[in-house]
Length: 381
Ligand code: SF4
Image 1 (tube, rainbow, N blue to C red):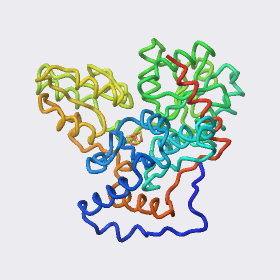
Image 2: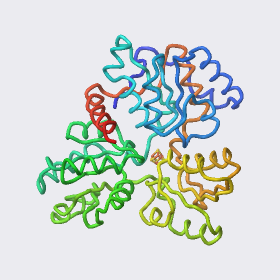
Image 3: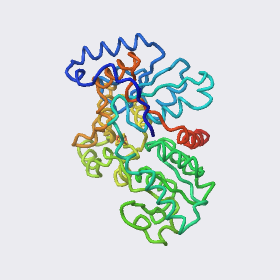
Image 4: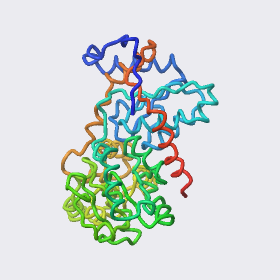
């Protein structure tokens, strides 16, 4: 990834003064930039964002849906991505893919991440150097021509490019099973990163045994802490990565709700650990969780295991249902929470002043190969 700041011009506005403004003024100033830019500006809000940011978004959704929506807009010149770093990278790759650039006579869409510190701890658990080292070590034991690398969309662009280069593919939490089927139909094995839980939960439901899923920990020495035999037996090799938010949900939370609320339906995100997923009634991406709640009859009781901002919003938007947050602790995505009104206002006013800040620009070669793995995913039904 490379960031393309306005190298010659300092920003017109510094961030610090924005921190002391109240939300009413910040909202009014953000709305003023939106009015001035009209359809040329698209603000995207991930489901896990705080409410005051979501209220200003043109679209809300999960990371892939948002990137696709932004890329589809003919008029868009700038995207403010209220999410985390890998999402802005994906938006840059999709919005500036060659056919889109050709339609716009080469003009790029600028993708802005209002706070560059909004990263994803899970994505950071698999770095390109570690994955390349893993691949090299695997090739000494098995034929890597027979391994499809699969990266969860929650990963850096250079990992998506790695997959593109090695015949691999990207998946989301909603299409992981279809992608794994695609991958295993072409080659005997998969290397799945960075989220071990999504990989394991998906593969188990496809009938793959735990013994066929060695866990590669880049910090556990040779072969990621596995024996050569464990690697040879591996069909879906998992990476030692996880979401710091979803790993907070525990099987005991499910049991507590079942004991206290007879008839409650428990739905959890596949980034939760296996024991939680096994104890739940349903497993689903954010999109599926929302759809399940929207389509349930009034009076349905839910315990939901995903990021708290989404669950609180569902509670608010569906008063006809009884919705509980699965954990007694406050599981929120703290990096997503870094995107707040001061950062959004500051970045938009700099954009309007012609001194854009925090522009996410993926290196051309990385973008080319990352797009290959993203497009493969689109072909999988
Ligand atoms: S909720 Fe988890 S996977 Fe999603 S951005 Fe936050 S840390 Fe990353």
